[in-house]
Length: 357
Image 1 (cartoon, rainbow, N blue to C red):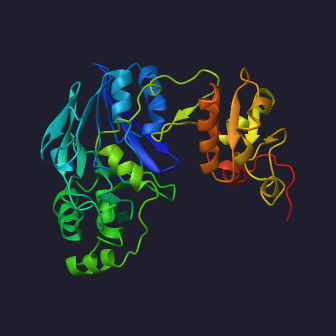
Image 2 (image 1 turned 90 degrees about the vertical axis):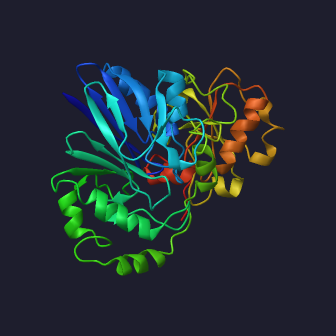
């Protein structure tokens, strides 16, 4: 029996896919995300599986792969296209190569265009295909960087993905609207960029005029993925601290979700590093938070206890990361930055004090 799970990373809107074979327990994970490695490892263990490999569809520009981190935790092999330009993989894939997990396998299908090294992975019976960023639900990947080519992408989709059986389910690398799956038949009819009788010239013009900004994480993600997700500093990335469900980011700091903070305010030192005007401003502040502006933090660090966990926060998360790093250097071991800051806290409608219109 095939074991299948679709997983999601909210920060990058990335889908990861776990496929396992029940007889042997062998499994593979497609497009893992660095910050979700603990979640993915836990799921593999809970399902009684053995992760033999991680497969990346391409060198991503919007998140860092979890391939290296999962290898350190589960001894899985790192697999990616030979055309990706990445270093540090265990297996370099070519078009039509097979990756086995137990009695099942996926076929690597070279589908360049979004990047030069893009691959889609097709399940052995052609009932499912994992298209990465090549083909999305009612869309496709951009072609304006990382050796992208609209001509190649058009050919990849028309001659490879669209020649799969019509009832083949297509599982994309991303979705930003809450959609989860599509099919070859659907996309051949309804995809506004590639469906119907849209010509290559129409597609080229469409892609040329997208005018999209570069992904926010591109300066971190691309270099990180070119080494298969291996961080420059690896000493503290393997096991999570036990005081909270923290996430270790590729940038090298621990973060914590606002909802967990909201449920544990009385057992934390919540340190707001904004200035006073912001603290009492439109976004308000968290009940019980201590106002320690970033430029005063080190002078006043003695006001904090070293035996009680500290969560730093700011407006959006930038200053709180700096604050957490400073506090760690000062000898505070239990420190994490609240992801998304007060913007994320308010977006989740969590209780707030001092809000002024």
